[in-house]
Image (cartoon, rainbow, N blue to C red; front, top):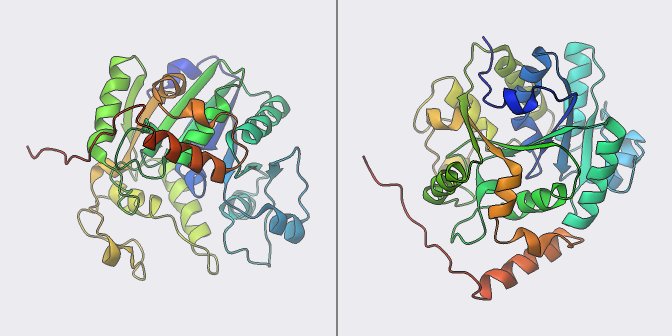
Length: 326
């Protein structure tokens, strides 16, 4: 069974597609079902991630060399465990399980200006003509005027960086609606923003992950491999997406030692297993903060500009709302 992708048409004539984690960390994992599904359709697909990994540590342990400033292909850590290195363990999984050398590119966690230069180098190196940003969660859809926007800064930095790229197709996919309870995302505003994107012609539709799909099985296997490495942290997004796709409901832990549900309860539901697809250009145009982030050189500077902008009174902040009961 195949993933029923609503973005086949804009990708129909694309030769080289880059799937990139937009919000950093484990977002690259949320792009794996898309990677396997598009490869099954005969597409040439590449993987990248806005990385939270320590570049200097990886260079020291694996002897990897940057292709350009802030851009490096991950290398397997081998028998030297790295506490936070999803990209490297994903490369290792491909080698061990599939006997395949797959590059997973790491884009260093910076501000939008150096990230744009790193993206441009990667686009030229790979001959990219379509970009698919992937967000684990939905905070990439936040405009900046929400009282509870989650961790929108990293996603907004990525969107600001790719806006300058000369690529014919730029898409955004979100996976894990309802998973971001730790971040305090207001899902009322997420739905309100999706509706506004639909009205602006920027919403392509949604599709669901189910266990019968080979793309889902490969995704789950890769995730489990990475999370079960010594001391490696797990993603609180995809550890909820996977049980949701398997039909779990309500209060459920994928791993018995997961104490996140004791801190903030997450309600596992089928909504978490849905992909939502958007025109990234329209998402960028609707943002109220991306212009302020374009020339930032660090995430610290980006946070400072966001805080200054939201306190300036240039636009009203929408108060948090609950989704009405049916």
